[in-house]
Image (cartoon, rainbow over all chains, first blue to last red):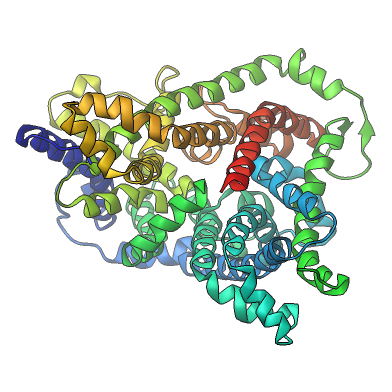
Length: 275
Length: 300
């Protein structure tokens, strides 16, 4: 793309390096301070710990309920993603490959949720879950997250399924395949990239969400990771070493996953939002 | 292809049932609830437009307007910083430099952290006495610049916005970068041969050809700016201190519907009317967004 002179290149490298430092230094400081004593954090914030306190992590793990948070978040995000993939792909397949009355209406109807953040409906959702006795329940969260992610997933999947040649599904039908078999054996295998985008984007959205657990969950044993850390920050507000180690623990899994699969994440997140 | 009704229903009902029950119906119910007064249990009392009067001209008017302006400020500053800086960094990454791949990954890291945790992390760094930001300023001899960033009415909101930018900028960089890389290199090559410089290529070729991406991002930023909650919650709490100087519609809504220390009486109806207000602001832009998305799909 743009060609730069040597001087231009040097400037660009310096600016990019500064930007990377702005991003990375906070993480480094968080980890550094998570291994210190309170006194060290306050007296020598930028130096290495006088004594490395790995114990901070054990304490934070137990007191913040990080293990429970991981487990709850993984369960909620995992089940939600499976639910989203199944219901959205079935719906997208039907409105993409079959002609029937009301098809266009159904598509536009399913897009409404893209335009209106579900947060605006939080009070009625809360009442609904309360009537179903699903507040303070991980299953309640799963239902909401599955529903919230339907519009974007349907949109993305329909785009991809539209691209699967009709001849393929026609041929399968002539061979006697039922609609369910065409969906499962012909169409789904051909839209795997779209399925993985949907899986990545919705997993990250659900894992990172804080608003719904804040409103719906009031029992520590049901807290997702974001809510667990939030409660921890409220209760241990002056135990800085533990706050830093708790944060590090809470953040670590997604960062590690991201570094392992950065290419998939980046295509997924950027395409998922725009296309 | 045609399909038997019973098969069709099998494919359509699960998604539509969940979506209608948990998204569409609640959105409508919000609208209805905004005409009622309701403490959260027991019977709803119909109060007509009283909630909206309370919001727009009554005891909440000042607070609502104050929060609304903060959302607008959020949006404007985010447009300038996320799209401006995003474009600049994307241009740098799109020029032929080594290691662009590594930079790309690093840029995106903060995006993987839940917004609320980003808020808590910066809350520690921004602590007035012992936070690293002020300590760093003292270390490099700029101690007189050190201040309680989140404790001053003049700096708190901007600080929160900067924390948001720190977290989200990578997303904008990568989306804009993807749009730039979609431009045919021949086009830019030809412009160089015709003697154009980088400045001209940027503004006459790259910017016009990536404009639709900027438009989409601006629309999304608008919708998101009116839904800000997590960072404010983590950095200055639902009371949005100091003295509501960081209050946004999201935190105002939270206080009216779910309470919090020092809030007035909780009223779900009043809370719902705040969401209806947000809804009204976002709706025209949202409809434009769905329209553009659908148009692009039809032309694709």
